[in-house]
Every structure is written in C-alpha cells, then in structure tokens.
Length: 257
Length: 346
Image (tube, rainbow over all chains, first blue to last red; front, side):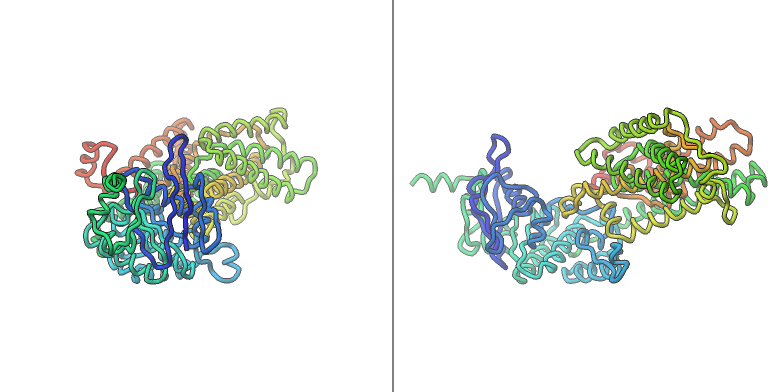
C-alpha cells in the first residue's frame, strides 16, 4: 500500500539516500535497521511527510502522492511516533492525544470551535485502557508530569487513535520506540505493534533493538550508507546475518565471488 | 504499559501549582491586609476599591494583549504603539463626525491589522521581540505623522464619556471591558480548539508542527488578538483622558509586562493562566494606590513594582524546586543544568 520508488535525498553535495525502493503492505511489520547515519531516520521522515525527497516517488493506495508536510501524510492515514515523542509537555494527556483531531461539541458551540472535552477524555482513557496502560492516574495530568514510559504510551495511544480514525488502511511509523524503555515496557510496545498490525495497519519500525526486530517483524530491511542493501524475511534469517549487512561485512563478502 | 509514578516530582509540581495559582491571590490578600494596617481606613474603603479597579483595568487590558501573545510563544512589545495608532485614528474619525460605533469598529480593525502585520513578519522567522520593538516605533511614528505630533482632542462634551468617565454601578466601563476580555480570553484559551492549539504551538512549536498544526497561523492569531486588545486599551485610555496621544506610552507596557510576569506565565509560551494576569494587574494597582494614599512619591511605586516582579520570579523558582531548603541548596550546588529541567524537553 505504501510504496517508495527510487527515492533519493541529497543535502547539498551529500547524498543521504539513493535508489531506495521500499514498500509496506497492510498488516505487515517491517523493521528498518542500519548503523547510525545509514539513513533510517531520513527515510522515515520521507514517509511521514516531514521531509520531501530530492527524487523518486511515493505511491499510496495505488496513487502517486506528495507529502508536503506531516499534515498531508496524516490525511492519508500515515502516523508517526517520533523518538522524542513530539508531545506538548504543558498540555494534558487527553489534549495531547487529540491535538489536531479534536472532537467538537455539537450545535452552535461546535461552530465556534468549542471542544467536547468530556468525550475526548473518555475516549483517551478508553484508548489507553485498550493499550493496557494502567498506571496513569488521570488523562487530565500534564504530560510533563509523566514518566518516560508513560509518555511513550501516550504517544503510541495518540497514533493508535489517529489510525482508528483513518478507518483501516493506515501506516504506522515508529522511530526507536523502545530506546528509552526498560524490559517490561518494551514488551508492551511489542504487544502494541502486533495489535496494530493485526488490525490491518502496516508498521515500519526503525530500531537498533535486534531482539525486538526478530520478535515482531515479518521483514527486515537493512540500510547501509544510504542504500537499501538487503530485505530479508525475518523467519529465514538470523541476527548474525542482519548484523553482517548492517556493518557492511556481508556486502563485501557477497561482492567477492 | 506498566510504569511507576514518581511521587517526589508530583509533590514539587503541586507545590509550585499552589504558589502560582492560589498563592498569587494569597499574596494579593496579604498586600491588602498590610496596607490596611499601614494606610488605615482610607485604603480599606469601597471608594478606594473602585479607584483600584479603575486603575487596574487599563493595565489589565494591556496585560491581556501581552498575555495572549505570550501564550502563543511570542512577546509583543508593539502593544503601546498599536494602542496609540488605533486610538489616534479612531479619535480623528470621531472628531470629523464619523459615527462613534463605526469609529470603534475601525479602531479594533486597525489593531487587528497591526497585529497581523507583526505576525506576518514573525512568520518569516524574524525575532519577535526585536521585530515588535521595530513595529512599536513604526506605529508610534505613523501616529505622530498623521497628527503632527499633537494629541487629538475629543472635545467637550466628550463623545466617549460613556466609555471613559461615566460610571455604572460605581465602576467605569473600562472595568467591565477588562472583565469581558478576560472571561472571553479564558474561554478561548481553555475551551476552544483554536485556543488550545495556539497554546500548544506556544509551548512546543516543533512538536505542534510534527503533529500537523500550522504553527505560523496560530502565532499570527496570537498577534491578532494582542493587536485587538491593544486597540481597545488605546481607545479606553483616550476616552478616560479625553484625548488620543500619538506617542506610545511605554510605562503601561512595563506595568503590563509586570502583571504578566507576576502571573507566573511563561514568556517563552505555552503555559500560564490569563486570569492570573488580571490578578497581577490588581496587585500592581493596589500597591501604587496605597503608596499614593500614604503620600509617597510615585517613583517609589515604580520601584515597588520592580521589586514585586523580581519577588514573583524568585518565588516561582522556589515553587518549582518544591520549597525545601535542602532542594534550594541542592539547586545552587547543581547549577542551571539540573536534571529535573532536562526532562521537560521530551
């Protein structure tokens, strides 16, 4: 459904990405791995609309699309959870989860842009329940009062809410979702990813966490120096092979014979 | 996800919330009690309360202008310039015989246009503070040019007496206007989509952008609201003194800034309560009123305002550290880059 063809990104004289052709199907979980500076985050930002490619095209649902900003990508049902979460610290949990997709009151007050805070709080609480978040005392707490793991849950719940709005056929982009988390929290992120994919949403997961890759991903795509050097079915490969591709040693050994 | 909460931090937050919220009201009450004991029954009288309310109302309207823009993440220092320009133009219209209601609408529209110009310029990435200092002088300069630097006299009887000098239930119109602006501003910021988004943009522009909000649009909205409030403040002041002065009154800007700072509102944007700005304006008016009653030179009241401002900022710092001496000492040892504040960026 989301397909990138021959994507190229240049920063002045530097080519960050070249000839990237990559896709994710509904319900598929693709892990995007690579060393620091390999271009993972850049590729993710192309898909999220935060950055425009210098060349190549993006095809979504069979049509060529252009994402000039994250809003445009979100309209197509593409949601991104950033590594730094992109939450508003001073705003409360419910406000954060509904920001840019607020529910308004019905009637004349709605025309004035009056928020239906009651419904938003209830829905936010319900969404967090669905994700198994039980430690949040209130969705009216400001996000800055939450722990790192709770903030992560709020960011994931926000994405899940937005994807539910896009009535299936969405794509979830995750940038290092477990980098700041402990073991048990990481496990619940795994559960979250599986549940989202189970609803027919494609997931692209950028991570350094290889155990997570093998735990949840259907496919592992490896970037090396801005090029997509390998796409492996998770069940047909093993961590050593992936590491070989990440470090480039595999690339040299394949090139020799 | 199963995660532990951290009680220590939430205690500090509660303490600072108390200080910045009800605490400010408490400070006001203490100030009133102190001056009552010091200045006697002349201070603690209904007549004097009316004086304080009138004096606070214009500071409060200017404070709303600054506060609304500060919440959107920009400091609008052009406020007195917008006030001077719109009041001068509206007064000239009234003097040449344009209906008062029409002149007042034009006045507010000039404020809106001036605010939009500010927002437009800042949209190019110009620094808000420097830019609005620039537009402050430009707006003031235009007002001087069109009036030949002579105040516009509204005449006797004043067509704006109902706005400036008449009293309703013992209070001038400016008090009701200030109350209306604060109630509407509070409703806007807390109950409406645009207000909540504007606050979010002020608090975390990058986060808001990546969520998909048009951040320039919401910043512009902050400046437009600031411009409209400035214009209202300008014509209110003109109606009180029965003339529109083309030179921007920078002293009111400092008083309004003090009211905003007293409220604990972040000048960096995204946090703070508009209603507490109103309380800040009342505190300033109370202090200068009491000093006048005691026959103390007005310069002292300016000094007192400055001391209040620094005290407010200091107590804010204390509040965010959680009040205990151990924490304060620790903060001195730790220096500015303490780990608690690092967490706020996430």
